[in-house]
Amino acid sequence: MNDPVPIYMLVIVGALMMGAYRVVYGRAARLVMPDVSGPVSTRAQPRHHARLAAALTGLIGVGVYLAGLSLRGPTPSASLDGLWLLACVAIPMLPMALSIRNVRPDFAARTHIERMAETGLMLLALVALLTTVGIVASLVFEATLFFQDVSILEFLFGTHWSPQTAIRAGESGQSGAFGAVPVFAGTFLITLIAMAVAGPIGLMVAIYLSEYASPRTRGIAKPVIEVLAGIPTVVYGFFALISVGPAIRDAAAWMGADVATQSSLAAGLVMGVMIIPLVSSLSDDVIRAVPQSLRDGSTALGATKSETLIRVVFRSALPGIIGAFLLAISRAIGETMIVVMAAGRAANLSANPFDAVTTVTVQIVALLTGDQVFDSPRTLAAFALGLVLFVITLLLNIGALAVVNRYRTRFE
View 1 (tube, rainbow, N blue to C red):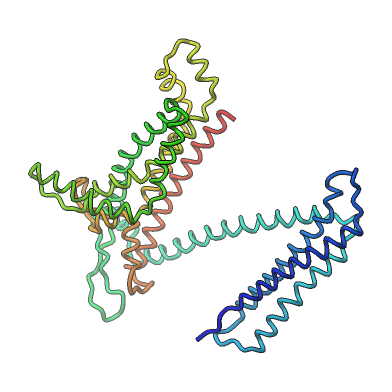
View 2: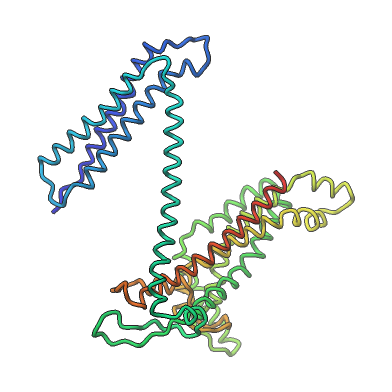
């Protein structure tokens, strides 16, 4: 059994940070003579020196702790842990001593703190950028391996999806069919149904809350609507499977049609309810951002409230509303749990909303679940689907940001 990670070393580093702050602050308070009648920056110099010392001590200490943690083997020895503890105590003392030495009136500690903060923010932004680049590179690399075995034309334009291939030598399996048109068709069908629900309802809710509702009604209704955004998608999936799907089946049976419980209609309806808060919240923000002077000018010319809304407010907010719709479409395309439970996994190429269909995200989960070998076309197909989905979502997000930026520059 592995020894537990020595968390107490982080406690020691924290104690060193506190000690560095107190020692450097006391020394700075004696040497950097604050002038009570001088500027605030001069009176705050002791605090700046102390913060710089604590930050340097903490950064070095945490770095030593993480380095030792990465070098610690599965069966650590007491002697190595002792050296690790000694390093966590001794090495952070160096920046503490340097900070004590730099305590003098001409040392701009506040400038160094600002530079450290700027460097830290830049590193965090770089981590996010490198993470995105790594994800895209991984998708492109694995998708390239897939397209070496499967024609890209067959993948993009084929109409039969059945990736049942043998993943190991000696196993029996079908040759496999990787025509992704049914998968993308199911994705777009469910997204279309969801937006047919969420688009009009969300927009009407936004118009009512921003233009007609009283402050009291708005203060109650908007939080209640936004609660829908906090419900887990698995709950929506259960609701679609247990309530919406059977209701559609019973209604179809009453009209003499035979419809299965799982259908794209059930998934689309519930998904539409889920993204109503996204459409309504974003649309409400852009409608309320329209300058009041435009409304007052329209009213002064004799227009009614509804005429002002349609001819002035809605036209002015249209770019932002389009951006909200594009973001909602991106959210619907990436949904998985509701589709798995309400629409099934059948890759049917059908425009009938009562048929069971599948989506890109559902197939990715299915292909990567279980015992898989990552050099098989069946498994690599998930990366090809993910790459295409990434490109589609990226284009939608770029379009949404472009429209929103156009809206912002219009009134700022």
